[in-house]
Length: 281
Picture 1 (cartoon, rainbow, N blue to C red):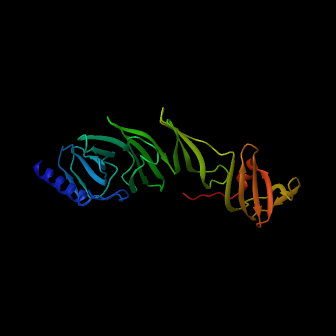
Picture 2 (picture 1 turned 45 degrees about the horizontal axis):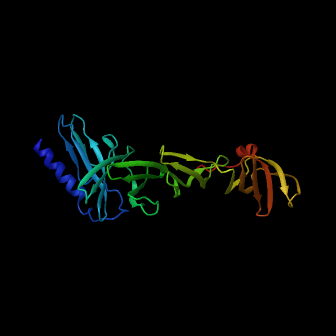
Picture 3 (picture 1 turned 180 degrees about the vertical axis):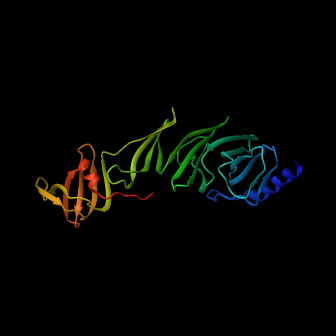
């Protein structure tokens, strides 16, 4: 096992080299060289991804691999042996180390960042926003509080747009999600986080501006708005180009704009299947 141990040390040396002085925002690094596990090794290996140094804390994110009892040669990241992404925090003043599993997702954590959000979110202790982009180009954020006694996973979100503290136990913000009419990405979905249960609750806006250009897949019947209280029956013909302007969910209405000037209001439930959808991933 000695040759294997030496090889692991060499790999870790190159994977970690020149990263201790990097600040937040460093990209995730691939494996350097290769790792070979001998028969029945059961070897645990941590690969450092990004480091962030503060005056009183040293912060590192590492990927944990566990190799099974068979010969393994690993030359690139592999989710097959992955055990998760771990946060390591060293409190320099207290001389204390702590570790926290932040995600068990795949190793493709692009644009990995560590941000100190203690001031912006009004924490009295160190608070971190660990963000990355996953395989499906989905932005992920994990919020961690570095308390006096331990690390605490506060909550996690995807498609985060903004976040602010509302009160001692509550955060509010906005996130991105697809609307239920043409499945376009909208960035105005409000959400709240309660630190009492660490649950994230997203809400659906009753009135939502869509602004999505599309085409009528079939004739759409509605009413053309010609004044504040005036409207006339109007039919949008098949293959007409239009813009899905505003969705009024509780009223089951959608406002459509044709040729930049013609405003048509129709039932949202009926229009959904007659409008071209956003099929982008």
